[in-house]
Image (cartoon, one colour):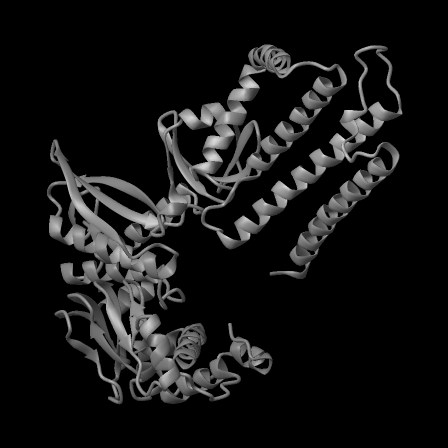
Length: 507
């Protein structure tokens, strides 16, 4: 409990104690003056219709009693809410109680001063209540609806709700509940104010009561000529990637929903935090789908694997497909420094390799002279020699995974060092195999490529060291790797990289 809250709680208790003390002192004063602690026994305006000292004392005593009862009820509510946070008594109950206490006190004063019978009070208050209730029926309906909303726990401040608005579903957070309005704000900052009575008639789902997040769906129509199982595999890999990169819940479902004229409709059901706008979650999934489909070399327009171009200047269809795969990888991997001409030259000397699920692609400690670019499937990196703390963290966080567009084995290829981890195929995978000889040709022709590669390898090494609980002070790691690359391949330092190496930054 914070100091500020303790202070507010103490101040309310002091007010209650002060009111109780005033009630006692006032009763003692009345007893001394009138020989009775009850002021209303000496007060009446039924005969002369004038207010005297006794009548004013009656007003003051009833006001003190009403204030004391109000503060006592509020203190009991506070104590109950602290002891039972799940069955929280809403503020509207205290507000209604306050109106009733002061209203009944005022009616009792009228009854006493005018010497009215209890039947007259009931009849008068009932008539007045009916008139007021009819005149303010909408306001009363909102108050009753607010009581129902808050006492039943349908919605509370901070809850995320999903409801239908026109033809689309909207997720918004409750930011305020008062006697008349429910105020909602969605993740895009749009504020909606609804009357309590109207809100109670809406059909909504309280997403906060679902710890797995909001269930959303995405549908795509693709040609029936595409292999259904391959598309479903790609979608499953996409969801694993999105879950690892974003705050999505690990539960999802990829399935075939229906069939149309030469088309198949695929559906992806997933869960994500309700605070994430739906357009952002759909963007994350669609962007990953585009990436993985590019890497798998699927052309959604022609609905089959890409064939060689009629105007191709290389010799075989295999080279054409290889160029397309390298071109797709260029956007996401380490080949950004290469031109299309260099990619075409590289496509002549690389080839595909495939591994089945659970096969070892790289083995820790082995020395290799090649690297792999992942095109299809998912790889898992198993880091060796984890300390007990790191093993505990690994139990909470799975091993790093490699997704289409990323590479493995680049450190051994570029520096000659042994493989720093074991890489296994988590699914059936297809990779592009690039040998040292092919990269040597590129590095000799493109000085900037060594700097670009050293940047990627340094970032990856730093991440691995953080996971493996390493205490090595790897200052200037990027510069060290750059020097290893140019030494291993017998290159000359790139001028721009050499100038910036003194600042520990490479181009």
